[in-house]
Length: 168
Image (tube, rainbow, N blue to C red; front, side, top):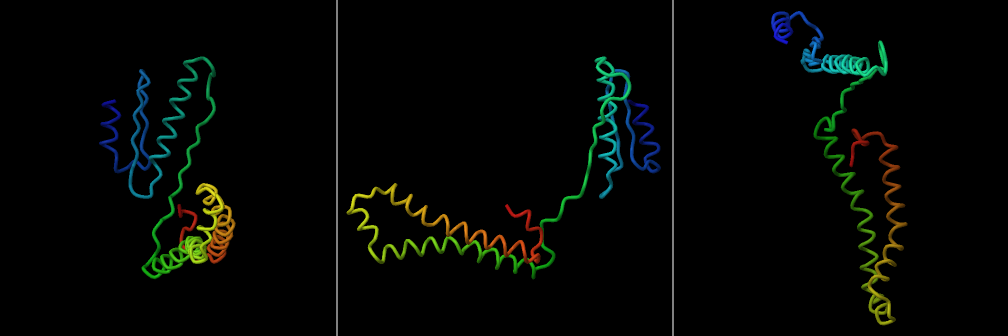
């Protein structure tokens, strides 16, 4: 281990990817060059994982030689922030107004009901509050799904919003 550390410390300006050290007691150490955008850490971890996996397979006598490979992949994560204040304000305006649309429709229905005294008539006819809420939900769910589907279709078809797939 000390020889590996000494070699890495002495030659690190000239090493592009890093190195792997496997001792006789199967203690593994790996080093990598960790500048931004460099995938050497993933390469070294993949090499160390495959080396240790093959050592474990050979010691268990389940396989001799090279066993199956562990393949690691890396790709950069997309940015989740819009570029500039203009797209951010446009996103807030469109998304905020569209997400306010369907709750407003549900609130309008209850307001219309109160104005026409429907709830008082329903309660006087023996409808329970649970039944009344189920009726409200059965009435509102198709409207909510229709409006949400239309909003999703508009957002998906415009292509002007940034990283729409990352919206929770």
